Image 1 (cartoon, rainbow, N blue to C red):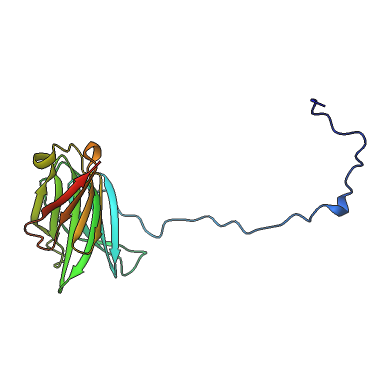
Image 2 (image 1 turned 60 degrees about the vertical axis):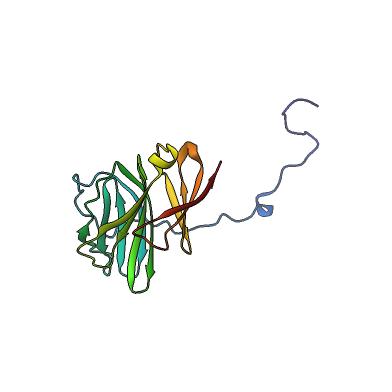
Length: 174
């Protein structure tokens, strides 16, 4: 039949045949630490952690934070990049230097030297807006010396970052 009524021919299942209810511990998670919001930096969009340093991508750049004690993260230096909106961040160590690469809305790819925790600063850029008319660089991934940038309606851009002072395009699609 098409009705949802229980089958009268089926006997009820005895309670002993049902599995015993399981119990579990429920724990409430609380943040380890909270610092006051930084209105001057805008909204946080991405984070990378290497060792005891967290690199937080804000709307206007990157802030370096000491996380050696996760209960007391301590802000250090902040980049002063003139950017519209930082959306993605990738950080890597190369030959004794720590480099950061940003996907920036309305701009493209920015390269930063993050070696000095107190003085992160821009060292290079590739303008996807001028090259491709890209409105947004939404995210990026680093693979070796290549940054793969998601450039909104302009698709994927591969950019050579082997020389962070002069990133150069390798190709794009989609």
